[in-house]
Image (tube, rainbow, N blue to C red; front, side, top):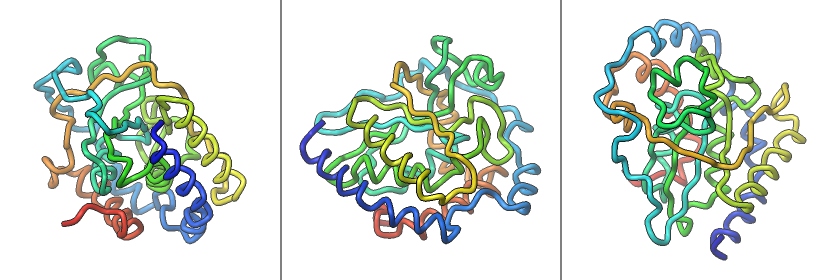
Length: 243
């Protein structure tokens, strides 16, 4: 890991107490009953998608010189992608699949919940602008890490809370942050976030890339993603990209 990234990571982890305070204020509480009702009516699985590509489409996933990458899963990758696209220093976000047994899986394969994959995003970022610790904070503060294999009304192992680390520094940072949050008691239930080495990443079909921006009027985007983004922007106002 570059020295600058290591220093930024240490500084970011030192700010964990601030993040914990935000949890305690209810900044990112799990979905309320009203949210869940809206989510039921807009459940993305009720409207099958016609994929125009496959997970082997040539979506750019190589690491540009001088950049870093991180891989996170926190439920529906449409939501996770939209959140991380907001952060200054994030160069690109690619939705995809990691952690499973099947090579080159499709969206239909993943939806069965039988392949072992999680819906994830691959974030390419400039560590001089945003640290890995900043990304960890965004990850844990934008979903509920206490619900096993589910987020809101999305259920299945493909929706598990997971961090796929790329090196030992990322592993240590993720484990340290998880421990601090658990010790804080900010959540009433145990943190179930999985922390595992990255073994594979398959870009999702092209219809799933940049989904929120390309489909702002879709029901799931309107009722689920948009409110989450509004909360995220308010909480991370000093770390967002310029309008």
